Image 1 (cartoon, rainbow, N blue to C red):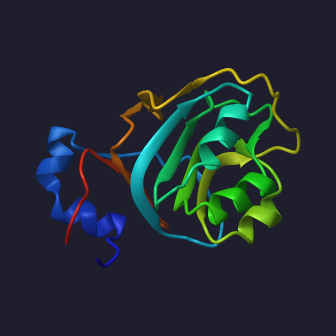
Image 2 (tube, rainbow, N blue to C red):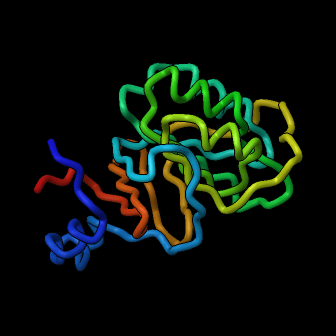
Length: 166
């Protein structure tokens, strides 16, 4: 199936936008990774300044999914670094959205995945293993549920209740 641009998806799905079945995230995320455009079913995780569960999920087969990490918007440490970016690529993840920071930007930019994050921070996170997997999260005022679809390109990020088609 051909990739759907976010602009095309918005133009072609006005009723879904109006009903809330298709949502646009606010333009607060920076673009990282080699895949400028990516999409896939969502796997969610909710953590705060701790990336143990992020690694655990990325160690599973990605099968083209997108990991959505709700890090509470913390700008005090990174939740994803170069090692996790490479792991995501190796395990077949399409991309990662981080409501927080990443680090090792040059390494992540060398990975063949798409990454969106609020920014970068050189400090690593704690390693306590605290958080929740596969739960509904709120990012940028938008509810995102495990199993929904994410579409990202240079124009923005969309969340859809179902897979979109042309």
